[in-house]
Length: 280
Image 1 (tube, rainbow, N blue to C red):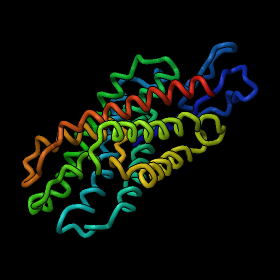
Image 2: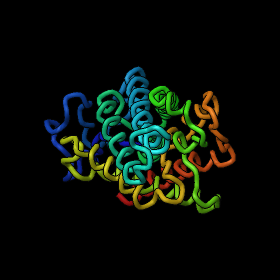
Image 3: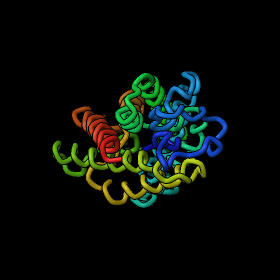
């Protein structure tokens, strides 16, 4: 669950191209005539800024997203049994907060799938490893912070807690589960990539809100079968934390399923980037 709010631009010689004065001050100048500039390149951000932005942003995403799962699940929580609506909107708000927090530093990918989709479209893979490593670190930090926040509730817990940290299927069917994650991630990444076709979204900042609402919509409509990971770091980082933390009665970390919320979003991202490149 993530967002890249940087506005994507057509070729500079296209009739739809923006004037240089339309661009925010922190972005690089437009490309020269005849050069294909398919959005602001990740090279616009320094390595240090990417590391800080993606680590802090992803940590906030997991803290708030995992936090709502803990609030709804753990006994002695005031929000226990608040239900699926609370979870879907909680994750949507988590995206909103994390993206606004990290956008000036890194573009607010917050999700390896988003990073991969953008790289597939633009062909620029140079900083993909840095983005993904930072997202994974942030996801681990966020999951630890969820545990610290609800430490007393975890200590009093008597039920398995993996669902607070990571996703799992309601019906264990690897093919269906994989397809569900592919479809959900495809929707997310296409929604993010096509925002740049609307001139005002990137400049106004409402693109973040649109992505947050997209995440809510995916959760409500497509989240039932698997819990809609749609983000490898969101699932794998907290799953690692779950396996290491001294949580009473925590149950299995379900490593036999762990490949699906990683592979599904990666495949969905590759499809989204390729489809956007061809269709738009």
